[in-house]
Amino acid sequence: MDGKTICGIIIVIILAGMFIPFGSSEKTGDNSVAVTYGETTYYNENYKSIVDNYFKSNSNADLSNANQTIITANDVNKISADISQRTYNSNQILSCAMVDLSSNNDINIDVDKSKITTVTPSMYKSALKSSGITKGNVIVTSPTTATGESALAGVMKSYETATGKEIPEDLKNAANKEIYAQSQVVNDTNASADDVAELVEEVKNEVAKENTTDHNTIITIINNIASNNNIQISDNDINILADSIQDTQEVKDQAVAYQSQISDYINSSEAQSIMGRIWNIINTFINNYTHN
Image 1 (cartoon, rainbow, N blue to C red):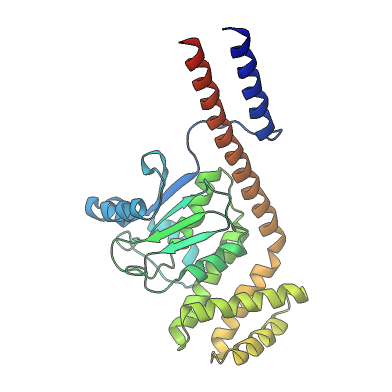
Image 2 (cartoon, one colour):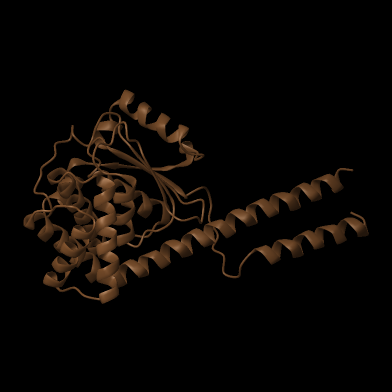
């Protein structure tokens, strides 16, 4: 190579260094996309094809490189045992979820409304926020109609698979309890799922502002905000919501810590992606000049 070529390569390398933060972690392969399948769906070829086609048509993710995990009835029953006391069979676990962490944008949630009948994007977003998850693209679907309550377990498992960082059990329990609590209120009232999610979000913000975990205080806050929004809730449902929000408030420090871990992962992944693109430029530059 002549002097100009060497000089050009050095400039490109210097520019590359300007874009790569110190301490960037090295990664091989694309670990930013993870998919969880309900076991009923995974073992039914037609069902799995329906779900995969939905993921492909509603994202830019490459499913061939995605990490895949199966959510079993046993997984879901471990959660529901302490919340709804429901028991699921292996032929009832249909909901599937995909998480894509290739972007550092705020969380975006796509729920297949033609299949998921109860849980809405705002309900998932509220529950995930309770576990410290505020970034990533999330897609939830099912091959046939499903409530979507059990899908949250899959979403959180997808985050764990994509990042390699396990969500603390207390955070998982708080998020799942919140989904079930909101679902029960939706089923027991005339309020829409989005209205209930908005109510819960307002209550959580007020509880955080007052920095309280007192059950009676939380009940008072729920009553006041529900009244202001013309939402009629039974005393039983108010207690269920209060228990859920109390749990959320008690684990808020863990949620902040996990949120920081997710942000660190996404930032380092983004840096690695930039580095890969820059090195491709460098290699192209070298090849063009060494073969001319």
